[in-house]
Image (tube, rainbow, N blue to C red):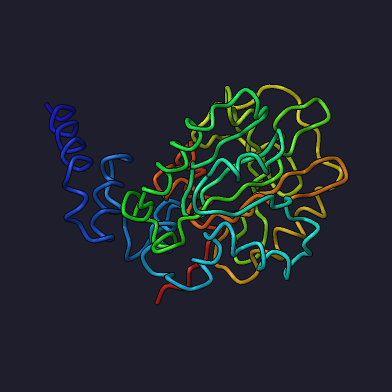
Length: 292
């Protein structure tokens, strides 16, 4: 009976109920539906509770700048040097035939105003322009803030960016290194493997010792060598996050080069906890929000 009631409430929430809720009640109810517990916003203890608190209370221009895929490039260039930026090929409102023709055989398309709106073009000759165009139009029609209630995306320009496609020497998508920064200090590193295939994920401390536990995806059981430029990457992540209570800095470590991926205000939108619960509380303890 309990599962049936929760199933019906979930359908109601995603059907139309969420549109009637304030950001605070959206967060509370979705948290309960997904994590099966009510969040404590007055005295948050877990990592996910504290991310919810940040969403509701840290509504600053800097948070919106971090979420803006295009504008953040200037911020990054000033903080760490523009040599770490992935080359920008184009920025446009509509993917026209002329824009398509001007792009190289390989590139990445991403929306400026939200998450999980990315298209990897590895061979333009094998792609259908109309299909890619429909995808970008769908992105532009998406009010990501209204869907996710991640405040930092509210009102961002709905433009499309085309960037150079980064590939390893083997011609593969590189691993994604995500640095969890707490009050400007890297405490944990998440490594994502095969992000556009059979995704796996491992967690490491700042010295690159494997941590017990997981975050959403199963662990990668292969060997992961400590990157030789790890210290430099940590330095970059800490510079990028120095003005934030919490920020995740996503980087690509490509041989001798380090490239900026994005800045993430709210990992998993604050609805994806670490496992086991002990780790969720431990990571939460690293984040000092100075709540009065």
